[in-house]
Image 1 (cartoon, rainbow, N blue to C red):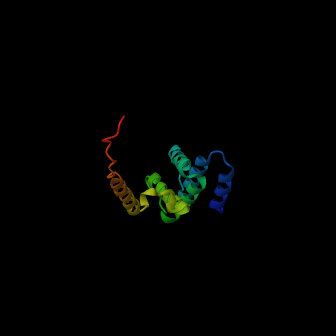
Image 2: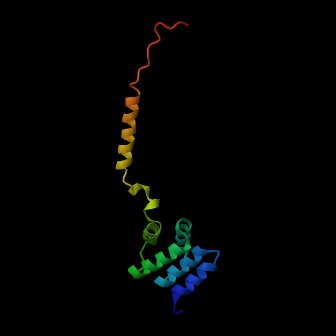
Length: 129
């Protein structure tokens, strides 16, 4: 098999079991036998990020790490997560927003409400019921 990436990419487009196909691709790249563990972690990643993000993450990992890591799931998760962040930008990451402006706006609204509360109505003395 000359072009492994193209073969597994084409197979991945039409398969109903992307986790199994990705596990095979991972094992072919590292020269391992496919086991249940690889299929399970590929299925978990596909459920979170989608089949093609996981495919390209496996490809990136194989290019960066020539030897198979002992526990590839955390590494693949991080690569998939980075790819997802690059693709979807800062809009999905609320934790990176600067909240200083929002906090100052809320403080201004609180001060405006405190000033509005200082209104005292006229007294009701001398009015007949």
